[in-house]
Image 1 (tube, rainbow, N blue to C red):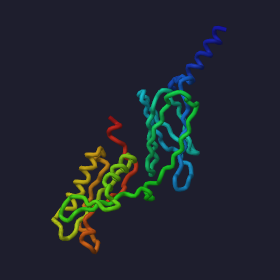
Image 2 (spheres, rainbow, N blue to C red):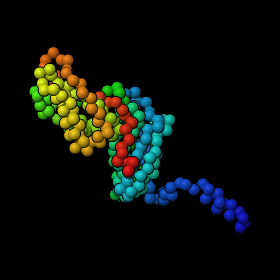
Image 3 (cartoon, rainbow, N blue to C red):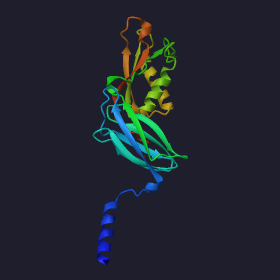
Image 4 (cartoon, helix red, strand yellow):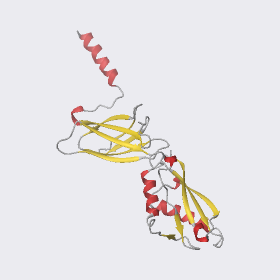
Length: 229
């Protein structure tokens, strides 16, 4: 009988070795389902990175039918990011606090493909011979829109392409791009996510239509240096 008990104890130790020990009475299950927004097909191998106010961190992935599960501790608020290569990211929070806590939670998300340009990047226009932005009636918050896009999609790297008209001062296009990049960095965007390109003289017929900066997505798999510290 003593030997049987030893064998059972040994088997139990082997099974649980290397696994996180979680008290199931103090946890709930989160189910995440990820889909392609355009086709509604499930997305496999989407990465979900989750951080709790208790200091816990976890990364898990969707399976072949776009589903992933993870246990969450009660009395904790979690924030998480969903990342899939060539798709825009999603961020969300979930709070497992208070009375009436359920046994499980379901969240569904629909990701947009970055290169099929469901992400419409703003165009920034400038006053003549200056680096000062023009606020158009329907684009008076275009810079803030760019900040929001970069914050909501932290794996994007964009190319900042600046143009100028023939009658403007030399190298003004470069100064415009540099100013926009510096202002984005001042808003908390990592500089490595912003690539400068001087477009030179614009080719529009009207001079005033050539004073602008546009953005182009060139990568969707950027990894923050801040996360690696």
